[in-house]
Length: 405
Image (tube, rainbow, N blue to C red; front, top):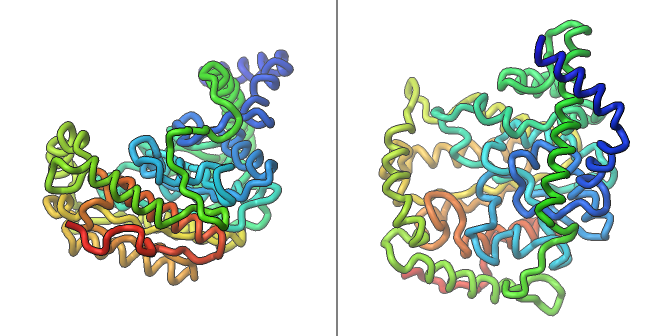
């Protein structure tokens, strides 16, 4: 009750100061919305900001791919060839907008895709990066989901007339199970109070986010890093041979000091701790390695795509085989996961870019599961060609040496 009183008071205050609140809030949805290369948890929970990123890119005449995933979307340590760097909007004729971060798993993707499918110039194609870690039975989605949940996106999802009532109910019930979303079994009074709570909280959060973004000085367009290579083919797209050659060289240089092909800095500081933590925390429950609940959520993502007419590319990411083989998630176990994702995609009639065969490629990943410059080049080419042609090209086309040493 105390929280509702506070929320009501805040709503009243914002109503009185509506002009000032709107002025701040418009900074994350207007033409001057700053470019976000890899959103924070606060940013992914702001539907205004996420929608504003997309609509402003489209408004500038850019063709952009919304790329849904989690921590692999972070371009910081993945080099120039990461989609968030190489395909930053405005660089080539196809760009990529990162939609998601750590904690954003399948249910988050389902809601966001359904929300984006309701906007003007809605995306026809999107890219999905499911992660094997989401499906491990040690995970706790109810712990992570509320931190990235977006009330605005949920409202847009529920208001999308292309999505069936049955699917909306499934998504809403799962969100409630994870501690967020709209209550599905409460009366009208409770729903009104819930809506007031969320509206006040969302507005306050967006105003605070706009203030923070204004202070950090980010501009409204994609960053221009003059030092980053942007090899360009005569047709205007990336020169993939040059991209792969440089990405391969960089990945090898950064992993020259260890036998696993990991980034040397990460290997020296974190590998031992990561392996100890994996063996301590990755517990198998009742003989089950993977969560059937998360697979239900993954299928809900595909159902949302099917009902809204969005065509997804499902990227099957590898993990570092030499590292995972030292855990309970052995090669045989991991093959079961890859097979389940492939089968679900095939049943839904959607395309996959399957990189699971790169598990033992020395330089594909910079740590246990995140792409190196070389892995990033593969991901970027798959995204770019899928958006251009409807078919994801997973072949480096001679841009890397045929045999790894």
